Image (cartoon, rainbow, N blue to C red; front, side, top):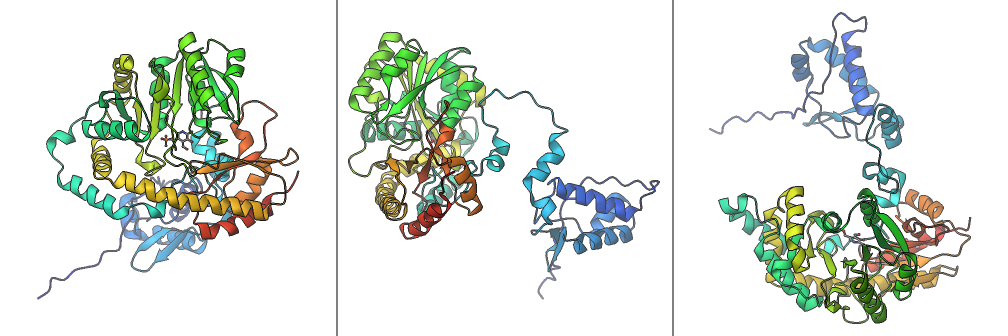
Length: 499
Ligand SMILES: Cc1ncc(COP(=O)(O)O)c(C=O)c1O
């Protein structure tokens, strides 16, 4: 005889509701109000399971009747929905007043009191609401997104399964603060071969994203009050980090040859460091010329300043071979090199690497250890095998062809459909290009309009520190299939109007 299996209706966790039997307000109303407030304040989220009436009544120590009444009211008003076989959940189609995130913010912000945030740093929890294009949005033109659907899921799953099966006590303990030897060897081999970086595995530190690499670097090399050259326009997240560190940012203009070193020297000859993206300047996309590279290195040797090279998407070049790193040209160990797996694999992996000048390894190690002891072991092993077994280079080769097609589709679309003069830069490499618009256009307004159509245009002006700034957009092309590009560009055309 088959065992009798009773199918249980799932029951959610009971929320914190306080009922007061002596209050004048009836119990069912107290329960109703508590739920409504929790939903409005987004403590309870759409589709979240709520407890059965029996469970809640027992938790609250009341009879089932007031709970049934409260649930009936919440169902009738659309806060709850009943799902056959799945019990009761918070509605996925909430009343309008609840859906707006501003509403939730307004109701909580008056009670919050936090340490002041330094000017120009980025307020992360709210940034997706205030600047719609800045949140992690999937869709046409959103920068920095590899083609997620083209990821080699099968190979990856196989490697993940292999490492899960083979999990043994030694790899369950803290690993080395520098990262696993396997991955450091694999990264060093890749960087020497494909990026012309002069390094040995002992100089590689595995970190959780370039952002952590920058943070550790800033802690080691910089003190509050130090001046730092930053490309103008430049990478906002780095700017925010240097601000947080109390550094003085010196914006140095970027032209068709990259960072204008002479302008930097004029503005602040003795800056302690310069952050550069020489392979594909962020955001304009220009490549730093050979003469500027040499000039920058010479400045750093003369002034004893550091160069921080952020080589975030250099794997992808479409018209020539990738251009070797700046670090590889340096003969004096003045360059700290940063690379990431965010663009070749995927950003939520949070794996990146630093190449540290030998005499600084101990100091980097000490800072890293203080922050988070060591990087997690598991995905380091997976990525090390992914590189060693050749999947990494195969994936890059495949994506290079795919992104080249997507980029051509974007360029063709822009040429065919935009009837205003635009200046395109940075299309030779990476996952995005930039367009500059004439002055009578306001990129922020256009970006607002576009976000209502669910296209995410990053306004170029917001990457400038100084005003007046150039108007335009950074257009990511890597996560939009070539056949969808004409439609996306039509949408772009339709939202672009002069002020
Ligand atoms: C200039 C620049 N550096 C680095 C990164 C990658 O950052 P992470 O490795 O923290 O994901 C990005 C991502 O968009 C970037 O634009």
